[in-house]
Length: 123
Image (tube, rainbow, N blue to C red):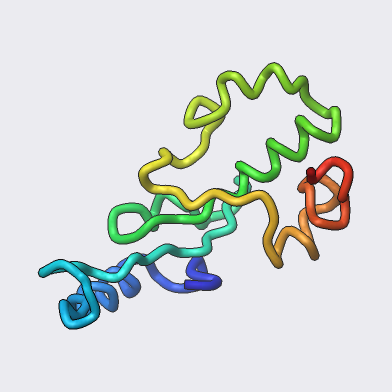
């Protein structure tokens, strides 16, 4: 769900709970539910927190791409990536959708995130 942070978490949870199971006629197991994830840009400093959206779908972890960008741009030591994960304040992996580049990162967030426009570093 794009821009989920503009919707109340309880409203999204209610909507998801109304969705019917996936059809076994299309190869899904009985009681299979769709995979939901919410785009919640949470870089800190706002009243909206990505953790508010955990429990009824996964949540995008924008800090992941920021910190990778910091490392590969030389702002942080690459060796620090050995401890990369929840210790850095990330959403636990079982609740997160992580990525390096997306349409929001390509247009915002300054020059921290690596995008396809940084071909040498991106590879």
